[in-house]
Image (cartoon, rainbow, N blue to C red; front, side, top):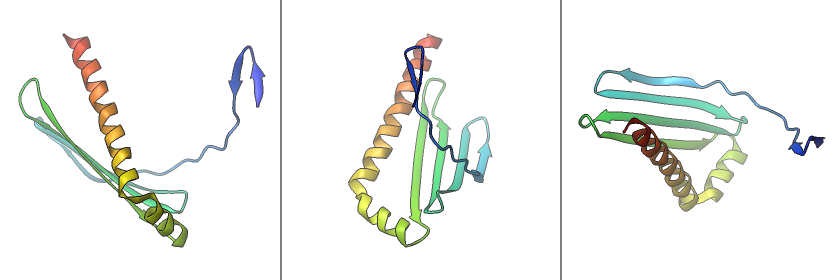
Length: 109
């Protein structure tokens, strides 16, 4: 660790991932993007984000994701994580999106 004027900086390795667009749609009433990448050569990750205009003040947001083990370690880790933990990750993500949407709505009003 490096100490600098009351701030603590933790040194860490940074990994870079190539994220590929698997599907893409951009129309006035619908925005959709499905992405995929491999995480640490252990997991294949896919995530899909869709925004559908309901009316001038409402948008439906649909998110889905999938993690697959690429090798034996990844497959074991996916089984150990379980459905409950996966649902919590999705719920937390959706709550973050909801919070940002409310902040954005408040700044417009």
